[in-house]
Image (cartoon, rainbow, N blue to C red):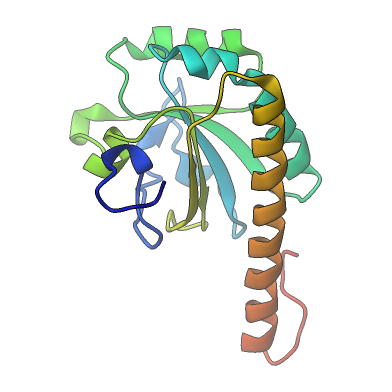
Length: 178
């Protein structure tokens, strides 16, 4: 899934997502919501049928990440719909998280994000650096459940590793936001 010749795989680890370009319906940027902790974005598209099917997976991830004190947000990078309709769609999914739409006024999102399959999950550092991407979902519920458990498991390992590295970098002191 991460092979470089697969254009729908999403951004590479280390790429940056400009969090100031993702905005709420009232114009607040994702950057203003983020503290020093990593975040998880699910990239959706109202024109994607799988995005509607995978709501159960998203809710499972939202709840599991909340237990790890990580924020989960919906994001829309490439929809052709007017923003008001995108936010109405997001509310209709009933995931109950803040939604953000890419501000197209200042240009398109990076090509890797524009072309990635939806839904896709992106674990980002607080500055928008891509830590991990999980592209796609699956129509069968048991597979979506396994995918959600795998994402949660991998996220736990990644977050624990980040905090361990931070603790070592701060001479063994506990990280500020465990």
